[in-house]
Image (cartoon, rainbow, N blue to C red):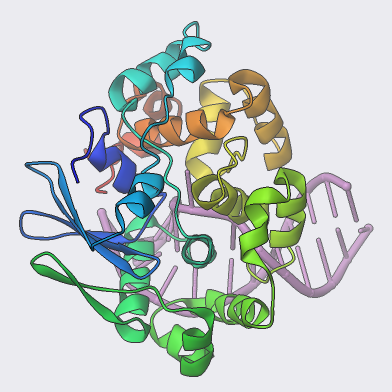
Length: 290
DNA sequence: AGCCAGGATAGAC
DNA sequence: GTCTATCATGGC
């Protein structure tokens, strides 16, 4: 299947909302929910398994239109700049379990290393699948993680997050219903998710935004905090920063958050460096290698 | 070499 | 309820 021209593939797949894709010879290889895919970046062709086109169309959230969101915010200079640079980014619709695991691993961690850990987790506990010229590995289910044990998670480099992921795998294996989250409503979904070990409000917001369709979820991490403090004068506890984000950006604040997050990391806002010179000490500090 | 990272947690208050 | 020290690992 062909990906539409307006979709910014790089910004969508390498902006820290998914860790399921890796760069291959002439494209990108990825896997979700046991289905492998290979993306030829030159032709923008997504090579998928037979009968999974609808799944991938939903995964990439094709057919949505962020135009109205940003039209309403046309008076916001920062949002406008971010949208001009990365308006082709789309919030994905990822499998809930895989997103939950990835963001438990993300806690106090960096994007490069999270990707490495998730890759090793799949290679060790998942199953190989053919993705065009590449081999990818499926994301292990909770049972597979329980089978391998907590020590295996330590060996993969999870550190103190190993018991968190193991505990969450156990809860899900014992009946915690992830499939209900998209329809319980945002507040209920947060309450349910934050009962799992290793899941606080920030991780819950990432799961709800990137895999459950809740565009009001507003994850507050270091970069979003930086953006909100320097560009919008909002600081303090994350609940307060989040409230300010909702007030500024509206009911789809999560979408705006993700584009601001990526724009900030890519150096679209030199204001951030001026306010925090440490970011500018090394030449590439404002433009992290994604 | 030392600071940082898509934070969560238990404990103090 | 809010604030704080602590946590394992490796990227840079």
